[in-house]
Image (cartoon, rainbow, N blue to C red; front, side, top):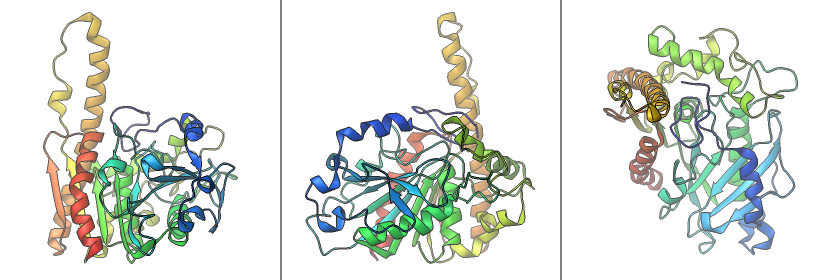
Length: 373
C-alpha cells in the first residue's frame, strides 16, 4: 500500500498508472467512429449523455483492439476529464440482433482506464478474445476506492461511484447492445475492493463479483484492517501525481476518521449477507517476504538495482500479506453464513500483474457460465 507509481512493474493497493498524456497523443493512430462505417449501434455511441459530454475528437475506435475509447467532461468529476474503454466481442458487428453480457472491469490505485489492456499489464483484450462479452473499463480516480469523495475541496468534485454506476453504465447500455440483466464486476487491488464494495451496494446489478488481490475489510480493529483503512483515508492524494492543481487531500473520501459510519456501507465484512446468491470469486497471494529480503550479491555494480528490486518486492509482499489476511477473515465469515464462494490463495505470490492476469484468465470461464445461465 504505497503512494508511488510503478507504470511498468508491480502495483500497490494504490497501484500503477500509465502516462495519460502519451496515451491521449496516441489517439492519432485510431480513427473517429463515424469514419469507420460501423453498425449504427456502435457509431451512435456518443449520442445519449447521462451527464457525459465527449470531448473533441472522442470517441475513437481501434479495430485491432476491438475497442471504443471515450473521453468525457463529466458532471461530478472536476479532477480531470475521465475516460472509458469499451471492448467489443468479435461477433458484435456481424450479429446486429444480439445482445451481450457486460463485465465492468476496475483498475487499481494510481491506475487508469487502460491499465487492464496492455499485454505487460492486465492483457484483458487478449484474455477476453473468444468470449461473447462487452468489457467496460472506466477511469476510477487515482485513489478513490470507488467511492464518491464526500468531503472534496470546493471545485474539486470527485464523485467516482456516481460516475461509474449512474453515468457510464447507463451510457453503455443506451448506446451498445448490452443485456443489463447479465452483468459481472471484477477488479484488482483497489479495483478488487471496488468490485466487492459496488457488487454488494448495487446488489441487483451483478450476477458475478470477482476480486483479485482486493482487500475485504477496512475495520481498524485488526492490524490489517487498520492498514486498509489508512490507505483509503490517504487515497485521494494519489491524484496529486498527475493533477496537483485539482486533486483532493487525504480524508476527502469519508472524512477525517478512519472508520466512520459511511465506511460500513462499503466494507465487504460488514455486508456479508449481500453476497448470498452471487457468484463470488476471490484470489490472492500470501506475499513472499523471505525472498524479498534475500541476501544481496555483493556486486557493487548491481547493489542499487538489487536494493530497489528487493524494496519493491518487500512492499508488494507486505501488501499481499495484508490482502491475504483480510480475505481469510472474509472467507471464514462467508463460510459461517453458509454463503458459497470460490476463494484460493497462492503461497508466495505477491501484489503484481502476473497474479492478476492469471486470476482473470482463470475467472472468465466460470464468469461466462454464470452470465449465460
